[in-house]
Length: 214
Image (cartoon, rainbow, N blue to C red; front, side, top):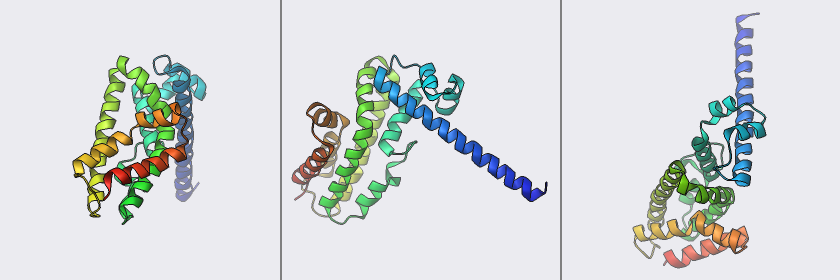
């Protein structure tokens, strides 16, 4: 075997291992999501996740960490739409919002993004609401995400202000968006009051325009 053949084989082997690891990790995430939604956080064990994913328990820990880290990963993935956390400035919808010159269009893009995000995040948030009082790790997780979301809303409100159409102060606008885009409100309207996601999206965009824009 030549040196070039060896390099090709190493690249092939590395790519194959990476693809296999990716499939295993996704199987673990899918199994964990299903079990958390079925059983709740406290009664879902890592052994059960491993069994559902068809791997051993050590593989679960090596791939995603302990149970609090696994749940955090699921929440971050639900927010970002990827199988890992993606910083807000790097998300496609954020880039789209910044590119829009019309503030009403910015808000419509964000409302559509929130509808997609909460469809993924809402069920997990329901699990978190139940488990957080007995789990300091989950309580801290949601506090951290809520604060991060508040910081991102200040950036959005500042972006809206650059259009000259924001009718209230930036900090107040940020708080209004933060409160109304919460998963709690999504669950109240979509899960409890049976709104469609489309209805939620239209209502959110319209409400923001009425509350925020001159």
